[in-house]
Image (cartoon, rainbow, N blue to C red):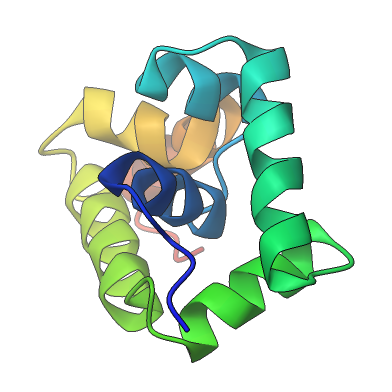
Length: 112
């Protein structure tokens, strides 16, 4: 049974699966953080998931989201950023502190 009824819900699950914070997800979906929390709670109740982790696992298992594609996409963005091609992409994928370590390591030739 497919309980994901909207593209909005699919986007929410994809962002959650790729490790975005609640604040980042809410901002990306143009909704408030409390609205996001209510939508997650609603999804969890509909599928019987006791936690967000379980919700993500169920979504991947039932193929509501393509977790392999999402992870490859995130890895590709991080690799591109690590090569110095996109500082903005690096900050988005890794966060400022991690990006700084990658950039410094890249300049000195060290591997992470």
